[in-house]
Image 1 (cartoon, rainbow, N blue to C red):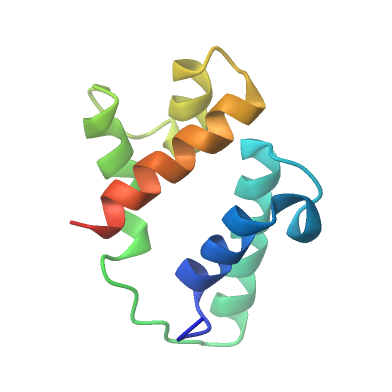
Image 2 (tube, rainbow, N blue to C red):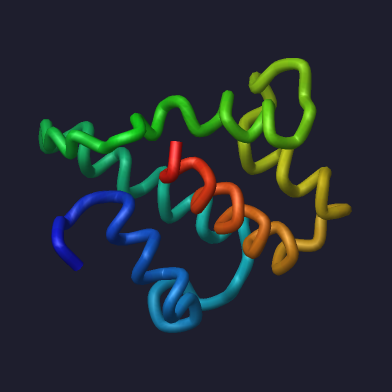
Length: 102
């Protein structure tokens, strides 16, 4: 892990999800990410994430052929995976990998 930021945390979770978040559910991951972002905001941490995490919702909407991203990446991915949390977890990481390559 080169940097301590959201992306390195997500890499750790992918390697050992049961250790870090307790299961392989997209919703659990989503709330973990939100908690991490709250910490970053409250502590004025500048992560310099490339690409910017805030554009992930729009990226997911384009990849999954949604006309807009207002429902958020979690909802879009869950709907695409018929609300199967584990399939959605894997789909999140597939999309996250593509996103980081942009």
